[in-house]
Image (tube, rainbow, N blue to C red):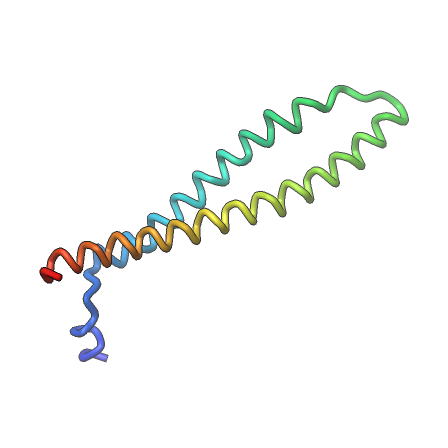
Length: 100
């Protein structure tokens, strides 16, 4: 294990960067997605009375399920891109340091 640790080119800072960047991007993307969703979808639904209230509740449930799926997919895509980007930045830093 010591040999593996000594051969690993990533410093502690590199490893932390590779973890923090994708997580932060995923969290920010999730918040932005929620803000956009609230502005576009939630604001279009008006107050409902009687039978319309039941229909609005059903639409609300469907919208919640769609929101959860879309938000998870969007966050996953952004996190994956963040992982690739952080890996590329660390690799570029290693290449510059080693003179390649």
